[in-house]
Image (cartoon, rainbow, N blue to C red; front, side, top):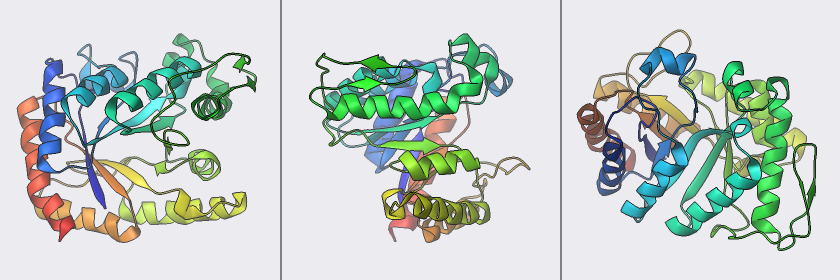
Length: 293
């Protein structure tokens, strides 16, 4: 199992350069990947967490990180596709993939906050359909020399699109979310499934559902690997966490590895860059070492 770390662009950290420094340190410590998150407005649970403090745009952060690192993979956990024009996003992502040497992992989701979705010009009730089409649009643009698309939300033909991503046939798109709809979308369309905050027991049940849905779609479930985003700290009734004590964190990490999870993405959930660095170093010392053994 690979271990990734959140760069905490969603935690209200005042010093944006500290996020880039975390990425550089993650690469030095041997983490496989670093991850960023996506909201435009501080609203709902985002406002509850950070108020009016900074929430940095994810792909801009990854652009800086790509320039300061060489190996670590660059993930989004997750981009809310109804907040983005898929044609423009396809170009931004392809450019980042080229500049980074083919390191981008695009986690995507449909979004949960109606007020924010409407502010971004997307109908909330159609966010699932928009997301499905957006994935198809981006893959068409990334892989076809003469891209053509005639959908409900996007239409184009007779124009070249460049650059193409370095990764072939296209940038991996992993589907975020824990609902049945998200699992179905991952089984139908995803290059992976990326849930958040599920206990090992809950994840085991959800992975059985994923296998069932993949079989129904005629897909090989090994083509839909699972990565999961988990935070350090205590679990709540709504969301599981890895724990605070290193021994507990290692125990839970091993439980995910035993289930066949490909990547465990860990978040420190702090607005203090010093605390985030200390947490990262603890995870490297305890979890990376335990998993490698």
